[in-house]
Amino acid sequence: ALYCTHCTRTTAWPPPTPPPSSNLLTTPLWLGLITDNDETAYLKEIGHLENWCERNNLLLNVSKTKELIVDFATKQKRNYQTPVIDKSPVERVKSFRYLVVHITQDLSWSCHINTVVKKARQRFSHLRRLRDFRLPSVVLRNFYSCTIESILTGNITTWFGNSTMWDRRALQRVVRSAERIIHTELPDLHSIYSRRCWTRARKITKDLSHPDNGLFSLLRSGKCFRSLKANTETDEELLPA
Image (cartoon, rainbow, N blue to C red; front, side):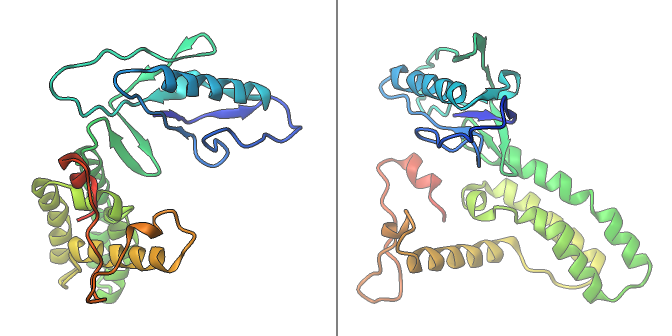
């Protein structure tokens, strides 16, 4: 995957046409597939990206473009060719932040959760200050929901189901600390995760045009959905719990 944080127009007109397999106008992420250790198709896609930017008067800042390779091969380490854009090599990183989520090359979520926990704890000083002002618990709880819980649950349907027990305990300790400050019970993150997953699933099943609509099929009872099939154990780990 290529991730670019800076792409500028060299001219104001004409407007850019849609790229061949991605949309840099809405998301600066470019995905490619390496099959059987053959990088030809992947490097070809990068060439298409460079040509598309040139045709549409767009300038990619290579210094702010990062490459992330996800490789589940455990038996042997592979050496991949460094992509080159505008005669400049693209930096390869082990993780990057995309849509407020930290994605790592092994698709683990410890890096993201550690960042979230640290950021949420920084808000405790404001919560304690409001408590010292003897504000009602309703106000304190609303402040917690807006400033702390919103951080802990950002894109929670993406990462919480595949997080480790150690990471979940670290998240729950943040909630318990907030409970001791507010002196009231707060919803645990697992219940929030389950509720949002169900909400997302219901929206997908009602939207026939959604690309994931075919993944949901009811059992004969008509009350439960059939579990998703995966080809490997790794794929099963990536499916929401």
